[in-house]
Amino acid sequence: TYAPVPAKEDFLGCLMKEIPARLLYAKSSPDYPTVLAQTIRNSRWSTQQNVKPLYIITPTNASHIQSAVVCGRRHGVRLRVRSGGHDYEGLSYRSEKPETFAVVDLNKMRAVVVDGYARTAWVESGAQLGELYYAIAKNSPVLAFPAGVCPSIGVGGNFAGGGFGMLLRKYGIAAENVIDVKVVDPDGKLLDKSSMSADHFWAVRGGGGESFGIVVSWQVKLMPVPPTVTVFKIPKTVQEGAVDLVNKWQLVGPALPGDLMIRVIAAGNTATFEALYLGTCKTLTPLMSSQFPELGMNPYHCNEMPWIKSVPFIHLGKQAGLDDLLNRNNTFKPFAEYKSDYVYQPFPKPVWEQIFGWLAKPGAGIMIMDPYGATISATPEAATPFPHRQGVLFNIQYVNYWFAEPAGAAPLQWSKDIYNFMEPYVSKNPRQAYANYRDIDLGRNEVVNDISTYSSGKVWGEKYFKSNFQRLAITKGKVDPQDYFRNEQSIPPLIEKY
Ligand code: FDA
View 1 (cartoon, rainbow, N blue to C red):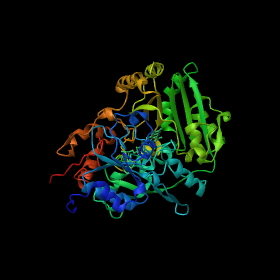
View 2: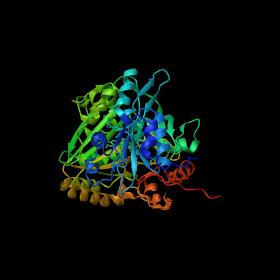
View 3: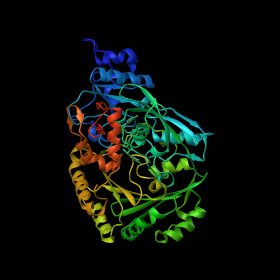
View 4: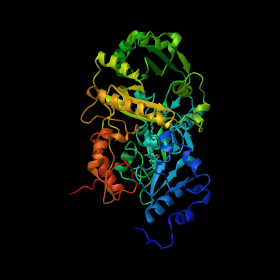
């Protein structure tokens, strides 16, 4: 469908016909290193060894993205798309193998338009979650949206891979609350729900970023929250009974009413119980006394506030404020390693004891545990690509940070070791993982005849998507049969044989 390539036309020349030069950065431009580094969150991927993009394109409207796709296809340059840059493996801006590619960085496309009357909003992919939350709250103090906890995450990647935070038990994941999208497909066409196939619309909402085109913007359903919510954070050391408490929490947490989410952050010898309750202290206290008296929660622990203030409070603590939702200059850029698990069977108590043993070892990271149940578990597995639903007790995220490259050996070893230790106690066949907690150790695509193979994708893909993986691959086969939009863990095209 593309005109033959005139010999002297090149990719950059093609781009420059359609996109203002000030929005393009070649490797040689003085601003390239700053623009590239701007949203790199994992310092492991800013070192010399990483394969970097030849160009960075920073579109300001959808037509620039369309031009980038058309030029990329015409000149055989692949595009990786970056919204907030939080990808754990950095696949939005680096390649593991030598490859000629450009990055479409949506940093400049971050408009949020809230329709409080209709209870919907359109948000561009380059907005960070905090900007979305802020715009919603500015419009109405009793509307919210269920997406990730960390305010600097990009809307684009978070919604594409699912997206969950403290409202997951009440309202599920971000992707299932998306009602329309604008997507640039591999032919450079701008599609929305009415012009794309039902499977394509299904796939972009949770099937992982990159694979199904570049999502320009998302229309979301806003959700009611009361004018006052209550937050608590209660730390308990092992000496104070942390083992018995988490042992009880794993049964109670997933069974509580949807209005109450209590996650656990286990670090060193301490488990911190962090809660968001959609109501006041007055009703939370008796609920806790009846459901989880062992925690000893009392009115002294309550922090009442509007929902919007609970976001920075949960993420950064009491001293944080609304400015932190809008801060785009986060300087916390550690070297990091992440893994994730899903738990369906409660752990025997001795396993919790051993977990605290692991958390005390050299190189230890932390474990963030999010209880499921209520809405996130009630949605059918096939409703969206995100398959971790009925029966999930909780999700575990293993997080490990270090602050200088050579210091990585012990944390990396610890992450591997605890992941192996946990195997008998977590989901099996497949051992599930959350697509947004990308882990390249789960597998990489093999590319044969310039197409990522289904069999190599299945290895990691069924861990993220269970039986939805096949439908994603068939959809990819229809939307992008030539596998233009790809990375090391993109959905490979499966061409259906009739
Ligand atoms: P990035 O821009 O790196 O993109 C991630 C992937 O999506 C890449 O493959 C990219 O190509 C693709 N992509 C990006 N924009 C796209 C677009 N417009 N169209 C198509 N594809 C696109 N998750 C969660 O659910 N809840 C949480 O609470 C947290 N917390 C958290 C904290 C911190 C500190 C980090 C670093 C990460 C999280 N996450 C998370 C994980 C986060 O949701 C995940 O990394 C997202 O993919 C990040 O989205 P970004 O747009 O920031 O990343």
